Amino acid sequence: MTTSTSLSTAKSGSALIAILFVTVLGVSSVFLTGLAHSQTLHDAAHDVRHTTGFPCH
Image (cartoon, rainbow, N blue to C red; front, side, top):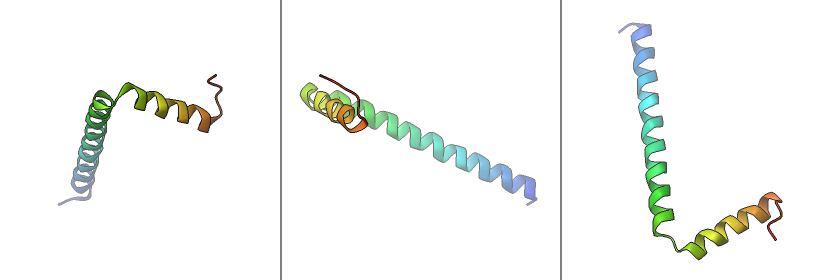
């Protein structure tokens, strides 16, 4: 195997891992927000606002 072939294989493997990670993250986000109660989502967003220093009241 040549160096360019091994680099190409490494890049495509790395891209596949990145795509898989983003897909799992996206599907998890959709299911978690879809199944969470609206009050839970509101409280989470509210806590993030306080943590980052944005006024929310």
